[in-house]
Amino acid sequence: MTAAHSIKRGVSLYSFQDEYFHRKLSLEDIIAVTAKLDIPGIEIIGDQMIPGYPNLTDAFVKQWHGWMDKYGRTPVCLDMFLDWNQYKGRVMTFDERVASITKDIINANKLGCTVIRVIHDVQPEIMEKLAPTAEKYNVKLALEIHAPHHLDTELEQRLIETFERVQSPFIGFTIDMGIYTRRIPRVSMDRARREGVNPVILDYVDEAYNNHIDNQTIMETVVKMGATQFEMPWINQAAHNIYVDPRRMLDYMKWIYHFHAKFQEMLPDYTEYSIPYDEIIPVLIEGGFSGYLDSEYEGNRHIQDVYEVDSVEQVRRQQMMLKRLLGEA
Amino acid sequence: MYDKFLIVEELLKNVEKDGQIIGYQYGARLPYYRGVVLSLVGEMDLTVDNEAVSPDQMTVTLHGNTYKLADLENIITDKWEFGEVGIITVLKPGGLKPGEHKFKVRQHMLISYVRGGFWGGDQKTLSLAG
Image (cartoon, rainbow over all chains, first blue to last red):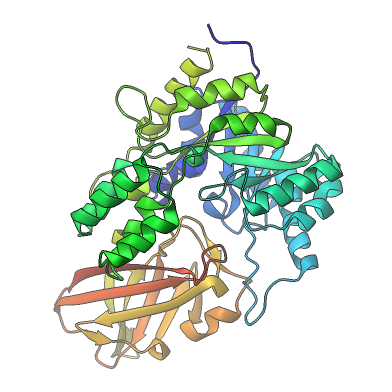
């Protein structure tokens, strides 16, 4: 029997990127799919599926809310990026970064979102500066912790210090569950093989990862094994994962506002090949998390070279798994 | 990512102006999961039939706007959207002869959260009708 909780399910529309890229599904089609799959919450990447982002037209905003009503969905989260290198020959100043994210906060509010996924390379000082604006627009800034980072890496510990000092319920974290990757996704191993990477090297990477050898040592060893410049990106993509103890979240649950339920491959038996969701979801329940858990399908990237991607089926399977683990099914 | 879909073969054709063939064009996409302002679109290395094409001879047309490749680094007011097919026009007197042509492209993306950015690439044999 699952303990009582108020965790809510959503989906990041990132999950349907393959179909959108090929223009097989429009944004409205995708929202219709989420209704069909009984997924209440919607997360969207502005730059991915809103042409002209961050310049939101009144027409688009009206259309967006029309779709939310028509399909009975709840806007939850807007994913932003900080392109601090976009000005030729220089980087964005502190004030320009604040202004850029302020625009995202205003946009999130226009779309009815109450969370922003803040990209990882945003400094604690910027989060602190933006806390009052976030509060004004009722949008939580949730900086994403994504592999190879986790709660105990340097930037994250500095952010926690800031959160503890500022004590604002509007600045905190998103956690991407890819940081709980127990074994290397076979879809990325298979892709590396198809690209011609030496199978001896791939077997070493697989075994080393399972024996908890750190990523830096693994990559140094593959270089010594003679990995070529061509092979390195494919090896890196497969090896670039981490596993840390999910229970560490319990020490910082106060600052965790949002989750990306990352997955690479949902099996026909409704389990994820490399991430032990049955061990992770109980921790969220134990910790009293009450925000959104948003499916984020990424395996499309590893199989699109030879397979027709079916994101809808992959998301359907993950949502069935999440329903079961949340005690809804 | 999306490397197998960067060159859009159905859009290959020669370009005519004032009764002369001045070059050719084909469709192109970016190897990235979101749209970007044009200053983040890095080098586009095109090789056709084993010959490198000079970027000075290339323009990209996006939703009606045409830009020289060399000018992209200064533009933050327009975007190449996710999955958007841009038309690449190559100036070459006489264009391409009918038949098969080997296209190879490498595209650099100047994405701030990856040190040095990252590259995508595609290669396809395209056919030009006679």
